Image (tube, rainbow, N blue to C red; front, top):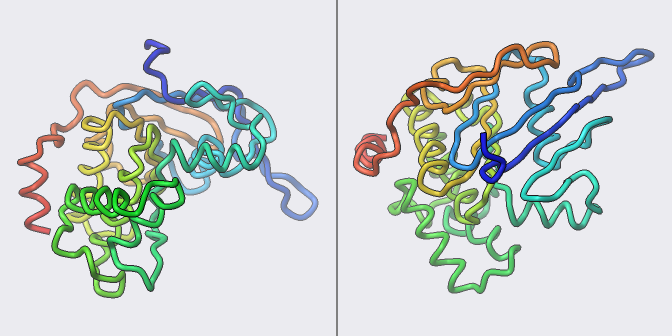
Amino acid sequence: MSSTHTAIAAHGLYKRFKTGRSHIEVLKRVDFDALHGDVTMVMGPSGSGKSTLVAALSGLLKPDEGAVTSMGEEIWKLKATRLDRFRLDHCGFIFQGFNLFSALTALQQVEIILKFKGVPKRQARERAANALMEVGLEAKLHQRPSELSGGEKQRVAIARALAKDPQLIFADEPTSALDGENGQIVIKLLHRAAKSHGAAVICVTHDPRLATYADRVIHLEDGRVLDDRRTEHAANVSSPAHLQTALIGA
């Protein structure tokens, strides 16, 4: 694979946690890379280390050993303020718990992250509205989380990630709190983020159905990569018409 298209690469990631008098090895010198425009699924049972891997890749949890190079920078050599800025500028995050502010409308949820980036108020509002339209929520701009379904909340979270136009999107169990139909809509939106926006989408999941939408599937177990394969025919879900039909029915 061409290094010019590599968004992130990690070598020898090792992480252990202390529990009482002993230690548990969660990552056992894992190598990893992901490409722009790809959806990479990291799969495995609970406790396999997949969430720890994504936290180490995204600058949220420092590994005990190993290196992560992303967007031309070795992120764990950055000072804390530079690392915070790196995540703000280059990374979008989507979690299973949505992480929305209860007092803010859908539009404000997306605007606030753009304001942190220093985007002028008028431009931030326009970009936020466009991102929410892209995920099919143009009729929900002024509703708060209590007025939204679980699937709609996750789509707000995706719009918030997309509005920054990030090169990297990290999704940790983004469909686990959703029913099958809404889960499929969410993964289709992540697929579109890779294909239309050119992001490297790295998605942790234990749901084997989502592998249909991946360009690459990595199986992790007991802190090690057991299998790493590219899929021959990832599902064709990036068509705007196809996606719009699914959103209308949601």
